Length: 324
Image (tube, rainbow, N blue to C red; front, top):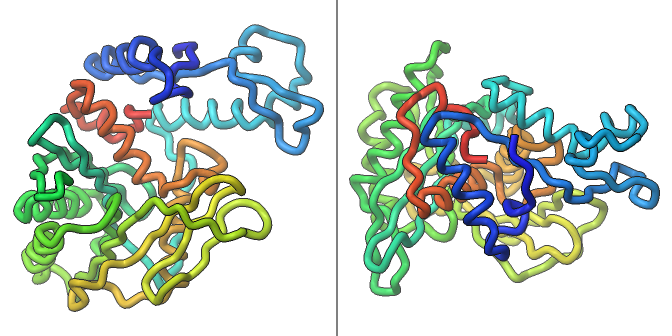
């Protein structure tokens, strides 16, 4: 357990490299789990005017009422983080049957250096457990953005499916996959998805995919109440709101490969996203984050990869949240 505030201020703070990424890399290379804590003041639920405590204050034994500490947001999340990093499974989300997916893939494509990019894919199963993490090369386009080539995308999906099938579970009759990617899908990426589906089609009575593009948006509808607000903006898209003052996220299903895609209503898309938010094992307040957790996981690992961190080869360690 490491005490620092640097991880909270990334990427603004110059201390993040020295006090967060450097020790994080050191311990990952040695397959040692880490938990960063800070004295950053977080208010207790429904008591913002009365209490304001941070994790380090608790360990400094400042005299707080025991019930107040146990009810605090940061303390509960700390215990949850320690539990999942010790390979615990805190809860399982039952998905809505109308939008049930067996495998979720979160993909982040980013620039490593001029002319070279990388695609990072995190796969989880329908219970929220991590089943695979993979990095592949990405190529640049004429607009200087990067995308995953067809064969690499196909390989990502096939490895995730193979890992899923190796689990000790009853094999489903149908296999449905959700592939979430920051920004739009490139045509080559969609061709890779088609190639992967065609390769596994014979094993199942039906194979369908939900290619979901997750976009940052400057639009801001006025949500009512608190937490996430979902507003349909098209037959295949919705806006994921957060809190007032925070720009929302737009998520939509890419129907350019309609013959292979699920045929969902906006409500079914929302059900899928809602299940993903609830499967966020890092916090009890998963709906308060801007992006689905699997996207956040991919982003966290990409930040570590940019700093020379290799994906762990120890599978037991790999399938834990070593990247948070």
